[in-house]
Image (tube, rainbow over all chains, first blue to last red; front, top):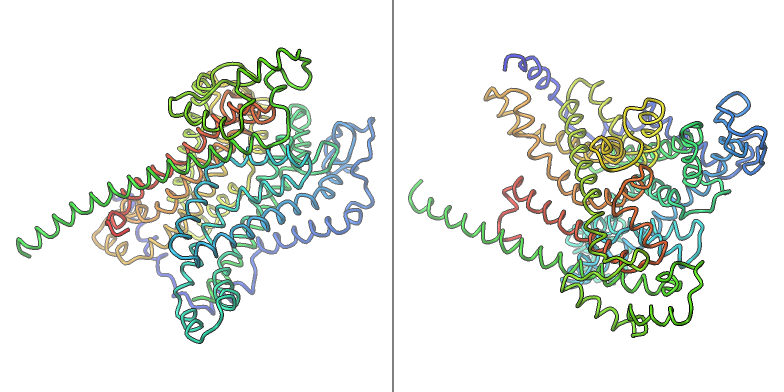
Length: 298
Length: 329
């Protein structure tokens, strides 16, 4: 007991938190910490890689095969080393940014479309519709994403689109639950009632009042979700469901590099690190947005 | 304070437990309907996908079966019947506990599942326990401590949550099986084979659980009842464990149900990387070889896991939060 006494006093003094005033928090947002700056910088770098990859890599070619340069460890000529065919890993990662980001953003977009449709239907369609949507969400949750992905790639062929669709549909249930609870909360808000009393059309009420207010917390969820979508789609393409091997897609590179992990760790370490850094960056920005929105609400 | 209040509170208790029973019964029925829907969805989706089922039975696209063999296979598996009839036959079999025969392994699906479910469940539960242990360690140790410690904990949790399990698996495999041969790189026979795959699955999940629990714990520690507990002279650890944590666990428990589903999904890649026995790898093989009965069996198991874990999360939430036990919900 006595050993924990200093900790108690330390904790209680630390508990004296200044009251949450919007001013204090938004001031903190305007002066972003090093994490947020790093995150933004990294994403800007990736976006640059998407738009003009050859600019970032000084004209490197992600598909140039050079057998005599195979399995070079990281060094001056090749900062991240080379793979089994002598292709530069750094160049390939930069060129792969476009597809990986596209998958993350595209999948989240599809998930949001499904989720908003279901959420509005369940939230505004009455008691029975709410029940039905809740049940449907449960079914979607219980269905393995991998099956969906494998079926889609059997139907649509290999490539990134089945990946985008599968990841999007697979993650839509989570967003759907969120949208539904938001719509239900907003539906009974006084301003919606006021709009109804003013005689606005249902379409206008949904468009002008329900959606904007229900969507605000979703901004954060989407920012966090893009990262998770990138992880999911990388796992799927790791299993061979993504773009076929020569492609410079991160998941595909990881999948290829796995065979050589015992003697060439850089084949898997760097593409994976880029996945992690991308997810971290979107997460950091998501959290900063969350703090900003919360301080506005406070 | 009289007899009438005591009676009122006792009858309130009785209603509470009846409410709990009704609630659970409804959840069970709902779970069964979810299961049926998932199976139905999987059945039609697997049959609609282009591909020759008969050639899957007779050894894949490379095989060159005689017309008699094809006809025999079609008859044996009832593939000449309309799809809806096949579906009904499957359902009737399911009610009798018959999951059909695997197309590619030519064994009863139930037999394959019995062999493969164990290792996956073991791995999944082990990962979940490990994840909770790591998350609680980080949350209890660093929430609302010295600022640098809190920030360090939060940062570590965010980084952990950003890691793809399969990448972590490969890194662990490289570090602790090849560079430093501490653990076996493959297999699923001994307990030591659980360490690396378990960590690969647990670390990202621990990040998630910890982040959610930390947020809830921070809120809980601001509540007046914490101050009152401290004023009664309770030690810091017991305030955190007995008063604050109980409030902070709810979001994590709800998330765990979802997480079990995600873990089964992650089990696929982790089982492939560590060459473990398990339904994850079987699912991957089954769908790639059009082994419909086996894939159906695994869908059944995975959805049942989801439904059961949700049920368990409901029960755990009822335990952790007495407010939920009222029949009005």
